[in-house]
Image 1 (cartoon, rainbow, N blue to C red):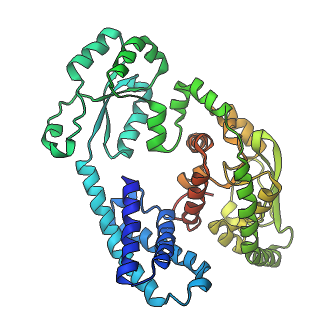
Image 2 (image 1 turned 90 degrees about the horizontal axis):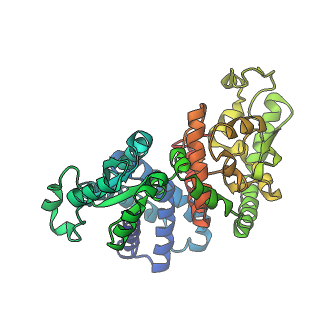
Image 3 (image 1 turned 120 degrees about the vertical axis):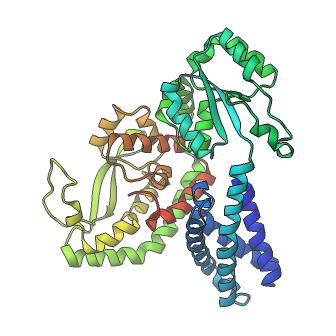
Length: 439
């Protein structure tokens, strides 16, 4: 659904600038691309944001402003063709059309898109919570109607009585879909490889008959955008093989050098300001350095601007009274995450990346890897300044939080691409403005 919506939005904005604003096609393309980047960065295409016009209006407005900032980066080349009215009219057009369009698309999808109903090869008490979350994320378009700890006889009985082929002409026959029996299903999902082995001959026969048979890791990752630890444990052999093949990309390293060099130059004036105010308010040191666990569990020294006052730390509870220790300049730098801009230096020397899992302290890392499945795998690639977990999950304080954050890290390690890195960098802008994510 979202790919079609993105293309439609871009087409609408492009046509508005070509025909309503009478701009050249090349300039309309630049404006459309910049506005789309802004809209995408502020998650106007997330289904939970599309269902609310007010939420989408806020994100559309902020995203459009970010798009204008992008346009200003090339303004010197297009100033003869652009004026303030183009900015104003685009803002009004996007604010009016995009939230309403997204609301309509959300309603059409939620009411009329076909439902896929699964027979589950697995135990509900072990995997039901994950499948319920997938149902919610899919807006009830994936439903899990029957769980079986299978025997060949039981499976054959269910296939005979409850399996129904998906109607390929669904949109022309909505009534039939509504009359589907409660326990009928049109696909099978494997949630436990050990249980799959009990009915493997039957499943192979169903595949020959083109009956849809899917596996939980694919669906869980597709809808949850993380690797739930329950799923990783069930399919441990599969993920062990996957993680063995993870390698650092030379293209990623080249991109890190280029991007960190540019950003280091862009943020250098802010670095001077932070240094001055830190020194003026609380003296030296300006920089806080700490050993962290990096790629393949190797230690390195990570740098950031100091944001806390020089006061003795309670060794038993280092976080006690932390809010009272924050410097005045630190309140700003911590909120906007610019106290971490010194880590561009870590990226340049090669022990961090722009995007990756956050590096932890050695003591904490050693504790977590004994408690969380696959925890060391999150550092098969260089740790990052920002990352998939940082933009998708809150600040972590409990073991359960760290487990969930690890699930996002593992998803990134398995699925990393240059496009995904770009997506994370764009959405980091939203996190920096405090609309989502954590430190």
